[in-house]
Image (cartoon, rainbow, N blue to C red):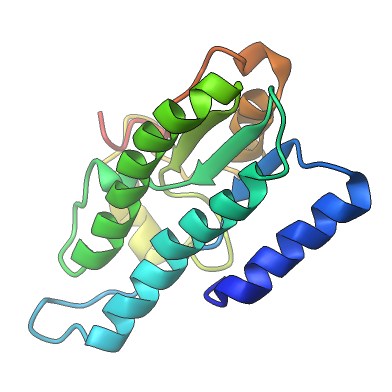
Length: 182
């Protein structure tokens, strides 16, 4: 995700193979935690490179191959709205940057009939963030629905945004977080 030339080549290759691109889902992301006193510049740069720069690069490459009805969907985080623990400033900033990028790109690409949206999951049961961990239990206490989300629940939101029913949704930051940010 951090190699702009390789990312662009991959997107161009897919578009060449199929004649166009209809949907881009930007879902790469990294999470580095640490206080401002101990957070390394290397971890900060990697956070920005993966969570923000790669989204810009991939979107720039993809929209060259999109027609009216194209969809760009980013996977953000509810942490752009709420960071309930120490050490997550860089991650929250990177996911907040996606919200601004989405709003600006929605304006840029709207006249071309391309929508751009952000899906902002809360805690989701993954290998990196298992629902049965001690950390998860603390998160559940902060949520209106005290459980981790499931991958298929997030995928359903992405599928909605990719489909024709969402043709009038653009520039949105859609929380799917069990009430984490409520």
